Length: 110
Image 1 (cartoon, rainbow, N blue to C red):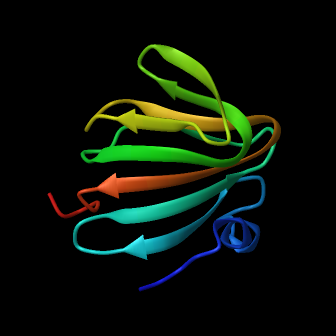
Image 2 (cartoon, helix red, strand yellow):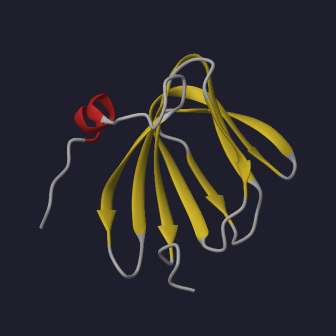
């Protein structure tokens, strides 16, 4: 068993480049990958598709998630589900947005 403090993990997450959202892999198995995103105000994960199902839980803050029907305001406690190959993205607006994304099956396993 592994227990993770998601808020501490979000604080420790590293951005690949300055001005980009920070990420950290919380868990990775043959069945699923769990990724934590820390998106600061003005940052975004640009809309993209994934061959897997993507399930997201807003852990902290608020922002906007996007899909084929446009953008939707989300806040801590909200859950978002995307079907395989469904366009999805996320961005922080006035405050930091922390999202836990479950990608299943794990990318590259299909």
